[in-house]
Length: 400
Image 1 (cartoon, rainbow, N blue to C red):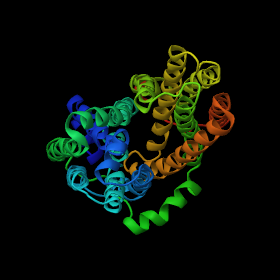
Image 2: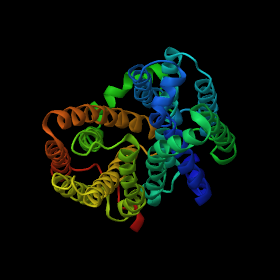
Image 3: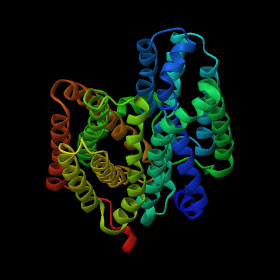
């Protein structure tokens, strides 16, 4: 019996639930301070712009973590590697809680962002240890955890900051992160994967993965297109709602993020259906739903219920497409999927960063309908790529 088979039989509902919880907590740490930006600025006696610049190092760190941390899951024991990552993350959060200087804050936020890539590392591990016929289903559960972490990071970060202050909030999250580090030693497999190149060799090999694997190229481009759309939508929405005639406060704008709950539910459904019917039908169904909702949102901003329905449909469609698309990437080499996931997520993240910048600029200069048109066009591009190119195939293993 191979190592991979041993790991598959050891995969239980409890382990999958722990993976989803750990991925949620790790991912959330990048977003904790965003609602408390003004409080942090007051405590450090600086302006909002300086704090905003410090927090901007979080996404930069995340990109570094995707490239450096995620591939290590193929090479080292998951229990020790992820326990160490969560332990260092807990220590970094504690350090952030006592900083008194904005430069030090930027440094700790960068490290936190890099370590928050444990969510992507966990999704790679989940794909490797899951039974072949349930790979997308397990990935859907873990992706739901990541989506929940993005949502909960902003909501819980703001609520806890109101209750115990932003420093106290970081201490509480650090304690929870330490508990997850201990849980990794108890819950996760003690055997390394099929291995992989060393760190420097792995970095040099990443471009070659795109050259050799057409499936990775196609998945990365279409994934970047719809993550561009996703980030442009939410960035443009924040700008549009904060400007006249709406002039909503930051906390009221934040409530619109609750529409993201639909995305969490969609990931689990999408994972199960991907195992049943394959990736391409799920991707196309998700993109059609998201594209129609994005187009309709151009006329819906004056009605909060209507725009929330549109946002929920966009989130559900794009998260469903993401689970199915990522499953094709992780199936390229099921025994060592992390390096492929790292390459995919790096391109995916770049698409989202460009979307954030473009969405805000388009909303400010041309208004919300133009944002909706931009988002619809990006989703349409992803749909065309999905309809005209083979999606690499994730076999329909569930029915075997």
